[in-house]
Length: 532
Image (cartoon, rainbow, N blue to C red):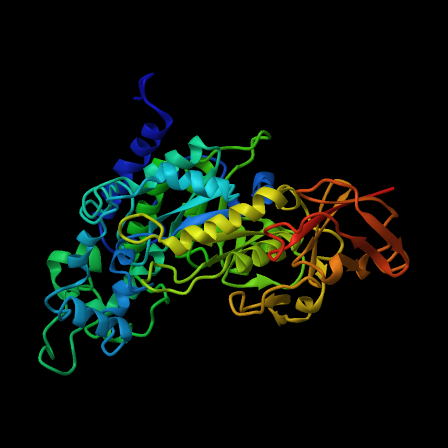
């Protein structure tokens, strides 16, 4: 019985905890087991998700920042360290041996203490992210390494409160974001963990320590590296190269559900990112249902939360979930809001990493927004929790640009076409859509590359560099062209607000810029165009 002092969050934990804990203790139970989804409109059946629609606030937000941060970041040698350190002969294996010693003596569990967060100030960082224009923020919830970044009920030893920084990282990030009015998201990469950590169950095949087991074989640490005792004899060896196959027994799928449910129930995020498609059928669908049932609602009573899948068939026409494209960008407008997630460098912090420039980030943001998408940008943190000087410079550059040109980004919608210029020709076809799969490798956009957004009857032309001679030419706005625009009556550059001289005729719109060249003009300028 709940008393009057029981909070909604406490109630949710009470409702889900007892049933889930009992179920977790029983191995081999299949997906027919009741999964303790909090009662509501959505259940662990896919058909129940079909009525979901993406909330309007997400289409308005456009830009989020992600802290892809955890114990692997503390090593400072980039992403997937907890797996690759056991991949004999790999660069991270060799790095580990040189720095820490053989894997049979120093395993991943022995590195978690390096994740200190001793200088981490989430309030200060959130101020920086908000100034940079982020409208939502993502915390890492749990990566493939199985280390939970919150006070986890189902991973009591290997979580950020019990070990490493001994702080509720997710909770503190969430409080800082919400205090500033940012939407708060969490990412979970747990569904791949069972097979991803298979190399930790092996041993060197040559050298001084050949045949000496890595620590993943030790049953005392099965809560981190997983219990393979019920798997075939050579399971770890067979899964050596199958990092993302999501092969796992039903008892572990249930643990997956329980942990993600616990994350959602404790922190009630606005957004939940999963690294792949919706996993494990009912178990994965149940996590989506939990998010939609537990999270905030829109003013109309619909779910105000967003779940991301990278599998197109999960999110057909915006029903059920939101489609995410990792490190790739659509080549055309999608009428349904979508997201690109990418990073300024490697996903986890790497010492000496070469980062994307502020110009590259703004190019991505503008291009994505012109196609009805959002950009989620990871800025990796080192063990201390303090961005390095180069990362701070990137944030400063993004801030300088969005503070002037944000009007042309936030709460906008696509125009009839997304843009013009040489960059519009670099696309390929995939799954019926046009993509640019190399978002970090394409050349910077230039002044002849123009992207369009709209807000009501206003058109924004984002000119991605300073034009030669100070004259902008926009052929797509030709009065007798295929887009058939109305006659322009007023054109101004954001940040200056003085009427500009222009000619609008059958050849397009030609605008003469004036005044001082803005400090951020190499990253692009935005023209506000109003029509009759």
